[in-house]
Image (cartoon, rainbow, N blue to C red):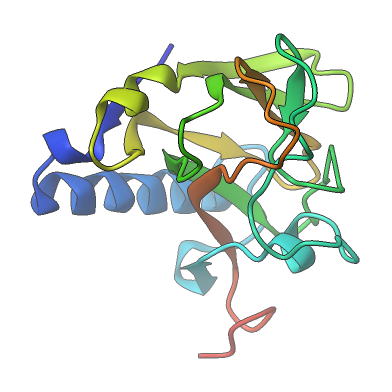
Length: 183
């Protein structure tokens, strides 16, 4: 099980290394093994787009939960699309999280697989970010979702605000060159 390291505890070199490790983990997974879908030299990494990558037609093209109405409830980080499915030629890898909503109304971040959340990839503690000047942290290990996976990424509400909460996942989409970016 991984953990979050607050950004202010890391040097710029450490932060760059976490991102590089995420790129490498995604490209290695996409180019080797039973779920490979492209050769290494054909793959690129890019920032995710909520509408294009996690459910076309989503009302919001930014990271946000629905309104936090009840303490002790899990809420999706994808807004109107609770369980998006990745395309057959895209892989998602996540390496950090930011929660710019103050005070942070969340306590845990769940990375699960499938609409019914049958498999838990990791559970990370968000409360430690409340003690940081910068409400952002890097994951000790990148979290990878394969093509066609149904993403179930949710947060546990500790403070019912009645408002949405920004939960910004730092991640990458790994895909063959030419699908979204031609260069």
